[in-house]
Amino acid sequence: MPDIKVTPLGAGQDVGRSCILVSIGGKNIMLDCGMHMGYNDDRRFPDFSYITQNGRLTEFLDCVIISHFHLDHCGALPYMSEMVGYDGPIYMTHPTKAICPILLEDFRKITVDKKGETNFFTSQMIKDCMKKVVPLNLHQTIQVDEELEIKAYYAGHVLGAAMFQIKVGLESVVYTGDYNMTPDRHLGAAWIDKCRPDILISESTYATTIRDSKRCRERDFLKKVHETVERGGKVLIPVFALGRAQELCILLETFWERMNLKAPIYFSTGLTEKANHYYKLFITWTNQKIRKTFVQRNMFEFKHIKAFDRSYADNPGPMVVFATPGMLHAGQSLQIFKKWAGNEKNMVIMPGYCVQGTVGHKILNGQKKLEMEGRATLDVKLQVEYMSFSAHADAKGIMQLIRMAEPRNMLLVHGEAKKMEFLKDKIEQEFSISCYMPANGETTTVVTNPSVPVDISLNLLKREMALGGPLPDAKRPRTMHGTLIMKDNSLRLVSPEQALKELGLSEHQLRFTCRVQLHDPHSDTDTLGRIYTHLKSVLKSYSIQHVPDGTVIVESIVIKVTSSAEEPNLKVILLSWSYQDEELGSFLSTLLKKGLPS
Image (cartoon, rainbow, N blue to C red; front, side, top):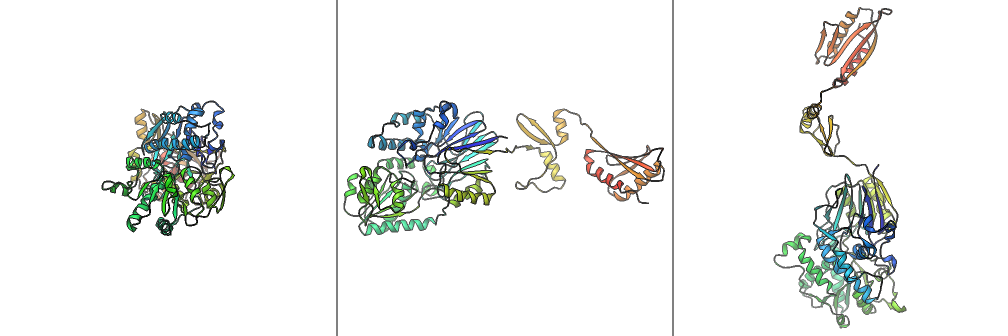
C-alpha cells in the first residue's frame, strides 16, 4: 500500500523552528525552515544532519516551501541553502519573497553585528538564497516536476501567509503554516476548498484556547493604554514588525483621533516603515475594508504614530511605543523594557505568544527578578498585561478548517505537547479520523487509500435515471453497472453496448444453468404443460411461451423436462438463462423446487 511519511525537524510538540519533512509518492518536500527564538546555540536551527547523512540536501529534496515571513518559519533558510547546501527551488508567495530578506537581514544584524556571533549567514548569503526563490500567486497550481504539484491558499495571519496543498498523483497533503480563521482589521480569514487531503498538517499554538470576542479584547486594550497614559505612565508594546503591529496601529490611530489624545505614539526601527511600504504594495492581500478605503485614504499612513528615536525612551511624560521584537528576547524592545521596568506607573502589553526561554515568557509567568547578561538582575515593577491579538487559529478555528477541507487524517505541529494531546482527542472524537502529533525527529507513516476518479458516460446516467432510481447525490454513494474502460491513463464507465462499439468487439453470451429434481407421475410433456400453466398464474406480467420443440420460454429463460428410464416418476427440470435475467432465473429455480400444485 502507498504511504505518506511526515517527520518534523522542528515544531514537533514545540513552538518555533518550524521545519517539516514530507515524503509523498517518492518525492521529498521541506515545509518551512525556521529558527527558534528561545535558543542561541546549535538548537537555534533545525537538525539538518537527519537528511544530510545521505549526501547534499539538493539530492534529497525536490523542493522547499515557505508558508510566511515570520522568522520561526524562514529564519534558517540562508543557513540551510548556503551553509548546509541546497540548490533546488524554494517556493513562497510574492509578499513573503519581498519581506523575508528584510527580516533575515535584521535578524543577522542583531546576531552578528550586536552579539558578535561568527558561525552565521552573511548578507551575501541572504541575497544568494533569495535567488533560488520561485514566487507564486494564490490558487495558482505550480508543476514542480512531472508528478509533483503545489497550490497556495489564503491563510490570513500576516501579509502573504499561505497554506499549501502538495499533490503527487492521487495522494495529497495540506500544510497550513500559521493561519487565522477570523478576519481582523487588516487581513481576511483563511480559506481552503473541500480538497479532502490524505493528511492535513495544522499548527496548534492555541490548541486549548477559545478566544473571547475580538471587540471586548480591543476595548480592554484601549482602556489599559488610555489609563496608563492618563496617569503619566509609558506603555511598551513589543511586536514583530509585521502583522500585529499594523493591526494595533490602526486600532490606536482611530482611538487617538476619536478621543483627541495628545500623548505621542512611536514606532521603533525603520523596519516597519519598509513593512508599511509592502502593505501598500500588496494591498490586494489585505481585507475588503482596507481595499475599499484605500481609494480615499491609505490606512497605513498614520497621523498620530511617529518614528521612534532611542533617546526618546528617557523623555519624561507619557508615551506609547511599539518596539520589535515581540517576545522581548533581543533588540530595541528589550532595551526599552530594561529602562522602564523599574517604574510601577509603566506598563508592558504582550500582544502575542511568547516562546519558553524568552524574557516575554518569564514576565508573563510572574517573574519579578530577571537575570540579564553579565549577571545583573532586573527588578520588574511595571504592570505586565497579556492580550492575545495573536493571528493564530484557536481550537474553534482549527475545527472549522477541518470541516472545510475534510481531511482523511490530521497531524498537529507548532504547539505544546499537553495542549496538542487535548485537541487530538477532541478531533478524533468529533471527526472519527486519526490524529497524530510526532515529536522532533519522529516519523509518522500514514497508509493512503487513494480514491480513483472515473468519468461516467451521459448515456449510462440517462439510462439509470430512466430506471427510476434516486437522483444523484454527492453525499450518498450508489452502485452503477457498466463497463470500465481504461484509455490514456483515464477511466470511463460506459454501457456494455457502447464499450463493444468503441472497442470493436462482439458480445459473448454468458448463460447460467440449473437442475431441479421433481417427483411427478405424469409424462414429460404433461409435466412441462403443468409448469407452463403454473408460471402463467404466478408471472402475470411476463410473456411466457410454450414452444412445440418441448420447451417453455420466459424472457431469456429456457425450461426443459427430462426423466430417466429407471425412474420415470423422477423428473429433471433444466433451466438456462442469460446474466441479464439472473434475478428471474434464481426466482424460478426456487419456485420449482417447491413443487407443482396438484
